[in-house]
Length: 150
Length: 111
Image 1 (cartoon, helix red, strand yellow):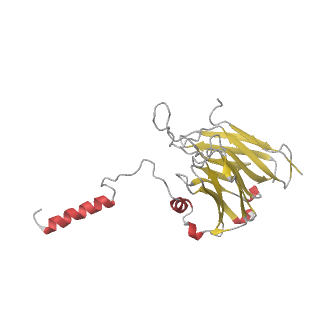
Image 2: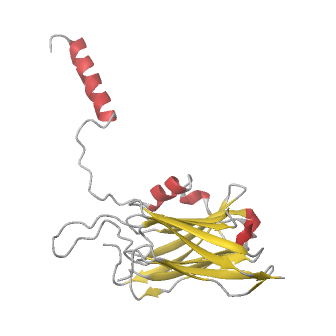
């Protein structure tokens, strides 16, 4: 380095390189996604922006016989015309996003049932996105003794 | 071992106009997360899962389900529908490896 100016130039390039991700970064092969990250990715908002509502009902076992196959059923009394979509998340799964359902008035009612995988004891969340842009949520904690993700 | 992508769809045989009914379906699919290791080789089994299921009533898209590998193997789905009119319910579903399938069901609506 001949001058201080050269040093700063080099430092600048290195800094730019790190910002572009050129610098080596050790990342886990399967990075676990947090609930908050999953919510931001799929809904664009965090948990704090979502209100709990007793208009949404979740049917799920309190204790899952098998983490590989947990039956869940979501229904809501919110009129179908007001609903855009339903999202299902499991907080503690490696990827908390499970499924989303985009409804139309032809569905008649907000209803969705499926079987999901759960890696560990965790809340199962049902989040409704309404056409006015707001979100409603209900959750139920399901205990898992034998995990079903990997 | 049933073929991957085969689906069984159940709807009521006869429907009255305006009736809200349940549609149930099961798709034969491994729904691999990509996190599981093959016990013999120790290598990770690649992710292979249904990504979405689209429902068309008389060619109009009425419901869309997006899924991750967090849905169980041989995924079961149930939704509700209003018996608006007789017609063809076409269900189109795909997985992350380019698998694409279609299942058609006739809806008979009286009244």
